[in-house]
Image 1 (cartoon, rainbow, N blue to C red):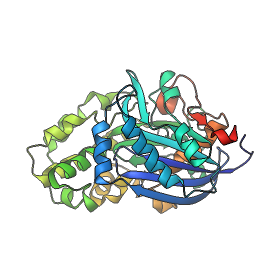
Image 2 (image 1 turned 135 degrees about the vertical axis):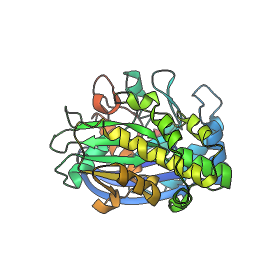
Image 3 (image 1 turned 90 degrees about the vertical axis):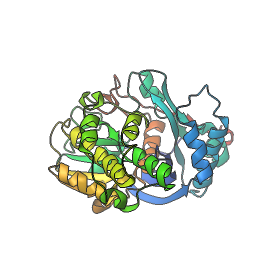
Length: 367
């Protein structure tokens, strides 16, 4: 059994952008955040990224043993240095996500990590939510709620994560619990960095548009953006979620554009999908706090600021670490799972009732 009160928990996250493994430690009782601890990052090599990319779309009954071993090995390397952590939150690598079809697949076995690290590991965070009719994503909103308390927010705000796919969490900090009515609304906004990163890799052999410089030099194709925003997803009432490749046709639409114009158009698509999504929020946010890799793209941030009627700022402006928020989220959620507290609810994933998702695996040495 975990001791009562705040504990040291480390979370690890490998996102849809396939850049590497983030790990971050926090001290929490699963409700409030007491402090933030050390962080670490392990980039994937080009060869590892190729293996992961080739496995996208595969399910549990496909041949993914080599991919699982890669994910487990790289995560173990990063997590090994967190000797003081009492609990591990292991998200794994999402390979496929079809919540109303085949389900969701986060590759990697937490039981293996528990033995390697000799620590209890919480993993498979999404499956229980999907089984109960939820989207299985996004899962960071309960952590975002705790962050709003940590930064002492008093007015409605949005946490916007711009990873491979974009997602937002609208929060009313006046409500006491994340699963209470009116506390949260969360959903995926649309493609964010994934189409742009794929474009840069395919055309230029680069992992991303550094500082948004290529997009800044290009011209947005407004007709493509207009077609993009007519996609039925944007008119679906949230909660709702996306797979990394649900907008694969967007990449096809820019194939005849120059590199710069294609980058500008894909960047604009990410920004406009967020602007469209904000209209679903219960009340206008006073500020949008941006996390994930997209906040480092000045062109994308400028497009967001131009399209929204509120302040758009990186989370660093309120003292948070935008590179590590998702890893910190799974450290936080791991404690909630270990203590039987809910990790998602109807207004975050559409699940029928608040649910505590995740599997707790203990190493054999702990019985």
